[in-house]
Length: 437
Image (tube, rainbow, N blue to C red; front, side):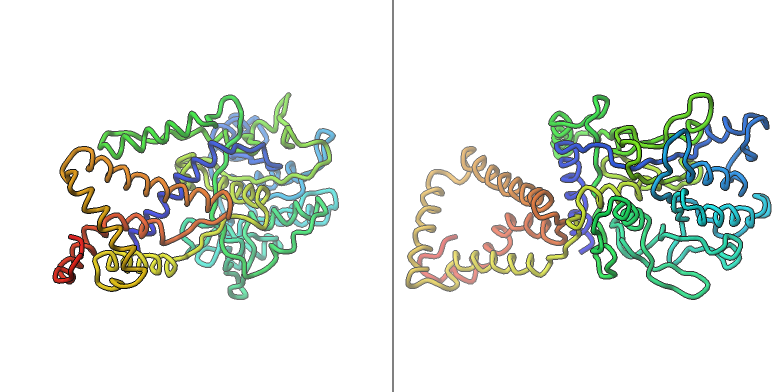
């Protein structure tokens, strides 16, 4: 099933692109703060700025300053509802200073009712904070930021290892969604269930003028697919990450004479919003593959999963394995082929229907099986079948919020049954009167 899974994933990714282009959305109440090299250099300013480090990793004092500035009200605006700091403090680093100082900052912010709730990246079952880090950070609130065993899906809960063992803990997108729900006074208790299936992340795009949303982008993708089928070199076009429906700022933009507001521009003063902070540095290799944006920083994976939850709520798209249903449909198709060959059902109503089909096929063959018209007609039938398969998948996405696994490839094999099943059955049924060859 490896080939089937890869084909299903490729098809669902393409359908996701179509859906994103045809259904752009507005900016979510999310701000992503990028810690990049230009921000570090600018805030250090050759030793004249407040940032102690001039390169990555930052000092613990720098992390504390960032978290304090983000979590507290500033410039007459209220603090965000919650912050996810997507940086794992796996173990204390002597070169980064005293981790206890960061722990004390987190404790003071936790006790301040005006400050945002802060969640640190806790890793997962195979990567987690050490006992010493947890102790010096004063047992901070953690969110799962790493996992395995779910493929390209995003779990809403996963195993988080710590000094007490391993336990199920909510992921970053899940806990931020819950914080937003509480701030909005919405009932989102459904997400607290521990039996929720992983989210099949769909990537979204805004309808800004500089972002390629619309039918034109769909046709560009269709053209690229046709070019590939024709063995020509063609690649899909990836929009810039700035087209994601979140408010994006670089860390250095929050400081200076004219700092950028942390609050998303469309969000009214006092409305709840959340902040995700992560490093955007190619040398750290913290990037994920997005079918819509290509290579994108890992913090955007959490932001995108949160967009899915905000936009779709309890109806978020899940991956549904319907292999047994697909196998049943394949067996039904094989049975129909065997019936058409005359292996069974030659008498009664089924027999009469079969004779009508056989007569029609014989008539078509007399026109000329090798003619260009017949070959074109057969090719069109197969093309229509493939198109119907894609449309079915798109309907599963758009109407039922499902990402089917294990049926698109089986459906695509059905047109080849004429060469496999029917050719084999012709030997079995060659002595039956009226059987069609």
